[in-house]
Amino acid sequence: MHGTEDRILPFEATAKRLPALVGDLKLVTVEGGPHNIGWTHPEEVNKAVLEFLGDGSLGLDSELAAAAARAG
Image (tube, rainbow, N blue to C red; front, side):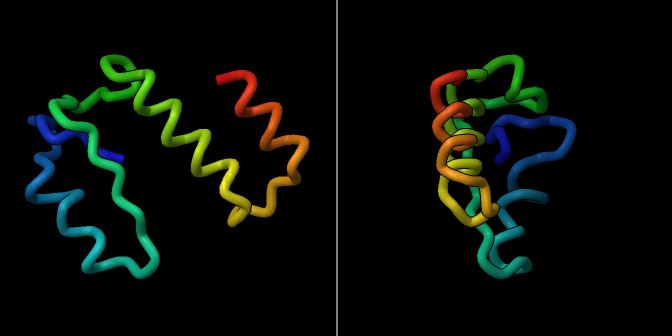
């Protein structure tokens, strides 16, 4: 997950390159997001994190995933 307007770790030089370098990677782009997207774009960040936690690939049980979704 990376903001497109990150001036500390520019998107083009860092995150944009990752899908070609890391297998089975899903890049979540936050349009207009600066370096601290958790602070400036919490709705987008929380949604993406909850989707990641609830997709089943981490082995979380359905009860835990449902609780995380309700908390978000």
